[in-house]
Image (cartoon, rainbow, N blue to C red):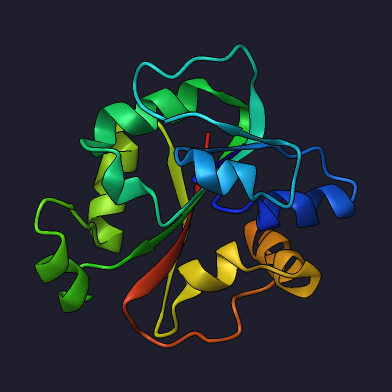
Length: 174
């Protein structure tokens, strides 16, 4: 499940690889322009419901729009299969431009994610930060980018641009 699918590029590329992926996007015009028929218009929140369980839930540059992170992670955890993972792409607290532009968005460090995960019963598998805008790269994925993301999530490969920066990949396991 891809939450905040934008035009559905990531979902489409996963489907092309034979992975049964779907997504939700809150903006109807984005869904109407989607490259994937597996994107539906919906807003994720504590009241979001569907009866499916997922092996993977992705949130590309979405987590800080959802409000209080603890109830949101508990909600996401309830949607995971027993060994399921949550893959978050977000900006880091070091990204001053984002903080000044969106003062109501709370951004978390690696240590804070570790503490939050302990509270909600998730394991922090990895927190890797970057200089480049990986959110854009994630949403404008191509098959090679998708394969790199999947290799990262399975622990087989680190992202290619490991430089301390303003964006992060965060991988959590149920």
